[in-house]
Length: 111
Length: 111
Image 1 (cartoon, chains in turn green, cyan):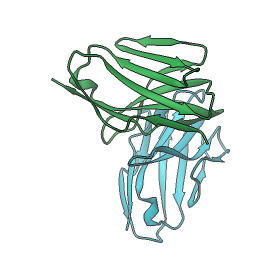
Image 2 (tube, helix red, strand yellow):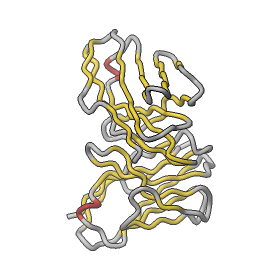
Image 3 (cartoon, one colour):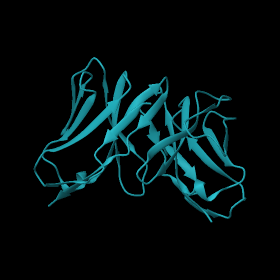
């Protein structure tokens, strides 16, 4: 069955460093991949979408890569800030209109 | 724009009781979704709708029913609540079926 894996251990980094989060998937060839941010007690917020024919996408301090051969996406936050601390979810299109979400990786940015 | 709103924010039910969760969106989106989020399991799709008057089953539909009588509203019903339905419920909407906009969530406890 289709499976998405995100590191369940929290990523703890120093302010100013680059945070890199990983999303791996198996038994699937998605047309696109999305990243969401979720703060405690709140709903997820859409950040970026990358399509299967795009290698990389950027938005301000965020960068996403999509390697369909490795079946992996990397999510980078450059010059990280304590305000970037949150859980980050990746999601793949299961079929038309539907997404499968990973369980997320918690990012902690220390001042 | 209020975006996606959910009612209520919190609820405690006894086993066997019924309730309805209301989701409303003011973005004129065609697609609407109900998810549940449990620790370590990520978001799981319960039911979804691709337009007014339509509904479809998601990944975990058992024990839930939905209705979409108006384009802006998507109702989730629990006919006979069970402790296994203790969870945080999120509603989401989407214009294209790609990026999704989430509500703030409803925390439900079934005792």
